[in-house]
Image 1 (cartoon, helix red, strand yellow):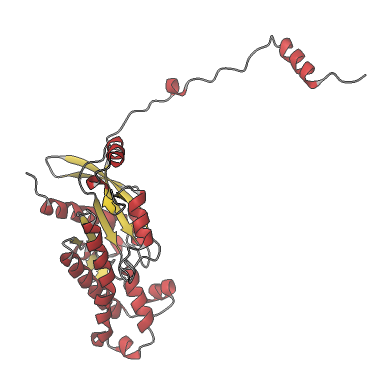
Image 2: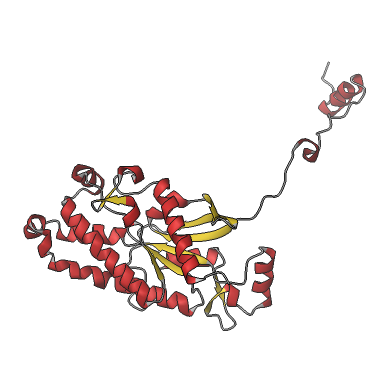
Length: 295
């Protein structure tokens, strides 16, 4: 005797259960409660790995009169330095440009030129900005780069015996200023596109553990030398920001003890932690208030 076809057997089985249909799946709307929360204002942080501690964090800022929430939108650009922020031909680093475009901070203008979306006349871009409920003002963009420049300079000078003996004789630190010039060109370029609320973050202060530094970077540089080098980079970044009419965010006075990163703000041998990130937001808010006082 041969088995009946599968379809026939299946129909018989269903009939035995009265042809019962599969149980209904409850409508999720009847089981889940969901309410809209206030939209946080984005702060865009673009740069090297020092940006990562900020990712997706929401900060509530209260000045005693108003309370407002900000969300950190991070775009990490591996290997980004002040020295490669723009190429020799003046072109913006491709990762930075990609970050700006993907966040719809920069779009194509009428002639195809890069333009800040809040200035773009195109109906298409205006419609997208309206859907997103994006304000018709320039976004707050904070750049974090320069830390890798100090590492690269250190690698180049690691074999210099005079350097390791006497950091006060670091004539080569003049290179710090030249390394920041491509960054300054980039700031001016971005401002010409309409991004005029740009901020430059200070580099992370050094840590006192020379062995931890060696373990992280595989070359030696004394603490005194690292302090001097980072200070020079900070001064160069500050000067570049001023020339480009941008704002320098310096957190060293709050996070250091004797020019070394306080243990309270250490994440690892090269990065600061979320407590230091909170200080950055406080200093940034203060700088914004100074630039744009309430009417």
